[in-house]
Image 1 (cartoon, rainbow, N blue to C red):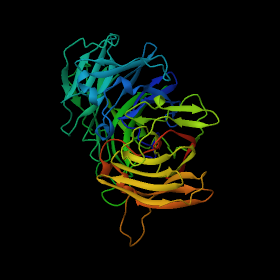
Image 2 (cartoon, rainbow, N blue to C red):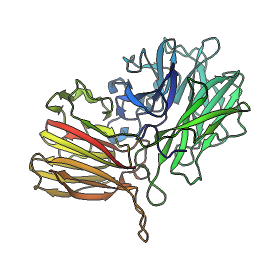
Image 3 (cartoon, one colour):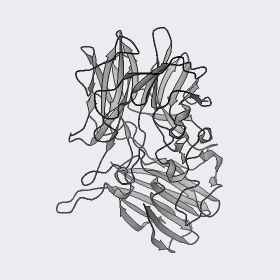
Image 4 (cartoon, rainbow, N blue to C red):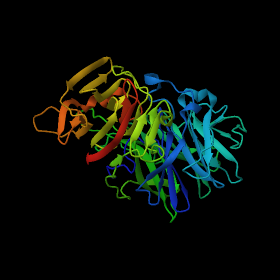
Length: 486
């Protein structure tokens, strides 16, 4: 299996479908909006984001700040039927309202307003149609549950029933159903979404069971293996346009000393699938996947923010205005000494090594890399001063400050991958450096990257890099992200 994801960065719980010769994929997004990013590919290896299925945070009862971290929008399923793309997912804060359903004629949208499916309480919903065209909603509660559903009204048409409880591993979830050669196959994730993660499968002649488990379970797992990709699980299958099958699944890339640290969240990986004696088997070496070119420069000269930009707990389009030739006007802000973000726009960190820069046109600005409001590292321009701040749990501190930075100097953050050295105690997954660049990079402070890892911060997301105005409006002339080493 390649150690490289096909979609690097915090893009977890992938779901996939095919329309003609093109493939479409969605992932979870948790507290960040716009939510449920949508990708397109023609070869399964190279993916381009084309939109977001949930563009408005205002449609949901999201928790603000730290209370909303790793909540929001959980795993989604994407399917295509009768000329429409359907996406079904869960909002954690609105879980008692039922699953969330939207549709669109094209993956770019426009997507319909969210419809809540009352009575379907739980997470990880799936859509499948039987031979008569009846749609079934399958999701995770205490077991894998199922009911008939009307996609037009969002009403359940039958009483939910439990159809499978898994193989005995913990946390059976993430169901997907497929009809192949007269059998219905139920794919699930098990073992918890960390290093015990696994994919299992069962089958039945009926869409509603009873289901018998595969004798080859787990279908996929890297638990207890010496492999750079761990926590493999939460998979979805797709039948290829030229015949054959493939699987997308999540995984993590841990680095540094024991027990290992992952910082970019759960990422999307690719594998081949064969059918042997009536059961799917996984070929992890079928696809040759190399590093993805993740570098970009945004001069904010389009009529709206690029789809990659998101904000925790709110929709960024409400407080960001792009003006060609000027940049992005940030019209809302937080106090310079505050520790919780209020008007942050950010993108996902996607590599082991990277450099991010922000060029400020006017105002005061923070360039920050974060896991959540309790775990972040920032370089800030406040008048004539450039300072470095960090928050790690209850500890908040200004780490360095200087007035030597010229007015036009860019704010800079860098991630440098961990390099083991003989005789030196293993450290974190990387180091994080903050400073400014006036033609030469001036580092002001460096920290061990473990403090901004999932193993320290907990949760389901990964590092995000972004900008936020301080004490008043600000204008960002440009932002760049450069992959430096993987």
